[in-house]
Each structure stands twice: as C-alpha cells, then as structure tokens.
Length: 353
Image 1 (tube, one colour):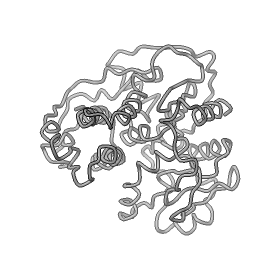
Image 2 (tube, rainbow, N blue to C red):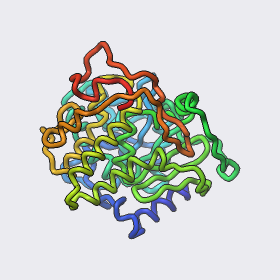
Image 3 (tube, rainbow, N blue to C red):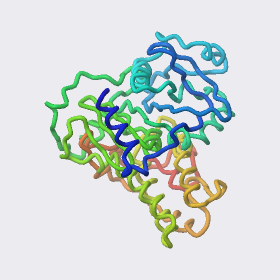
C-alpha cells in the first residue's frame, strides 16, 4: 500500500501533474459508502453542498449480480451494511480506501438504487462528475466478478516480463487475465478518472493523465499503447480547445473514442449509450455543445455529416499492452435482430467501428 501512497502523493503535489488535479474537497455524489472502521460501512446520502474526498471502485459484476441497493434495502443500508454480505472485491476496496486515509467510497451497485429508473437517470447523468472528482479510482482489473478480490500472491520484482500474443489469442488472454479492460463501462470510467490504480495478478499499475508506472518499475512494454492512450489523448484535446482547430480536433477525438469504445464488451445491448453517457457529457461541456445536440452517438451541426461516415471493420485490435497484449477480437461485425439504435448510427453495429 505504501507504493500507492507514494504515487498518489507525487501526483497530487507535483506541478507537472496539473491536468490530474481535481477539487481537494469535491462535492460528494448523491450517495457514498461511509467508512467508520476498516470493517464497518454504511450508505450515506450526501447533502446538496456536502464536500469530502472520496474514491471510486471500477469492477466487473460477473454473471452473479453483487450486493445492491434497492428501495427495499435503502433505509437499512443507511444504518449499516453487514460486512459478511459484501463480496471480496468490495471488502478489499474498503480496506484500500481506509488504509489510504479516505473515509468515503463510491461503488455503483450500492450507491445507485437498482430498479429505480428515476434514480438511475439522475446518477447516470452525473457519471462524469463522479469519476472526474474522485481522488483515485481503484480498478479490480484481474477480477472477472465481484468475488475475485484485489489482492493476489505476487512478487513483482521477479515478474519483469513481456509476452507477445498472436492476434487469435488476445481476446482469450484478456478475458482470462484482465477482464475489466474488456468492459465497456470501465472504458469511460478509466478515461474520466484523473488517477487509476490497477490491481492485476502480477503487480500494481498506476495510471494518471500525465504518466504511468508499474510496481516493478519496468519501462519495457507500453501501458500507453492500450490503457493510457485514450486518457492521454482526451486530456491533450482539452488543452487545445482555445485553438482555431479545436472543433476539428474534437471531432477527430470523438471518432477515436468511439472506435476504442466499440472494441469493448457489453453484457446488455441496451447499455450501448448509457455506458458512454459520461464521456458524452464531458465532451459536450468541453466542446461547448448542448446535450440536445447529441443524437444516438453522433453530434448535430457541421460535424454530423462526418459522423455519419463511419464504417465497421472485422479486425481485432493491434493495440497491445504490458499487462494484456489483448483486446476483444470479436470477429465479424453485425447487426442484432433486436433494435438498439438507428441504422445511421454506429451503435447499430455490434463490432469495431
């Protein structure tokens, strides 16, 4: 844990990491988990102007839905959430949060009321703010479900290795070893978060808007080939918004993000737009667009004609990384028999755009 503290302290204090800075005491999300001891946690409803530092957890749900907040459990969880009810990944994330000195943690399945459409719409619209304002996002990168946990038996000093996988094996390797990086929801979570720490089978990996570092301190391989590229390029675009070419750069950036996004997996087709909603809100605020100009994954105005000129590809990905060397490699692009988007939208296609 000392390594994470070191990375976090440097990122917060270094003047070179200006792009990583979030408010020191941001407005809390509508609900957070409040930690009163390393093993005592309850749901907390934040006041409209309540401020405190908090962390987020990015994780795979897996086939079994983890513990969740519903209308029936909402009141009870404000009193206490039994520790033994929490899956291993949640327990580990709480331990990390407490050890780092923070007392608030945001976990989607507990902080959004399930089966409540109004609450989901409200919280979904705040997704960009939730991850952007978190001091750190904890990524359960090597766990395929909420019971996988964060902690693994590793010895990073003895694992300074880089293995190349042929294209046909990439999706299999990612699925087995780095499932979170295949998840479409995690794509926007990772980009929006100013700082991320990946818990993998082999080591811890730090990723922020300025730099990346792994526990073994190896410089070989390239995290930024896959995991860092979307984050760094999105930040780079933000710096250029005062330039005359800002609109063109933003349009190209959106096309890049969509292409990256469509390489990731969704459990439910209906989530094709919600899983990108946070990035769309962020993009609109930076480009000076109103949300109403966003139509089925495309932007109205001068860029609309260009946005319509998308094409599908049957390729896997050529992106590699020192933690995965993998991507979805899903095969032939196709349209589902069940409607999920207008045919003029890239979202009507299942596959890489």
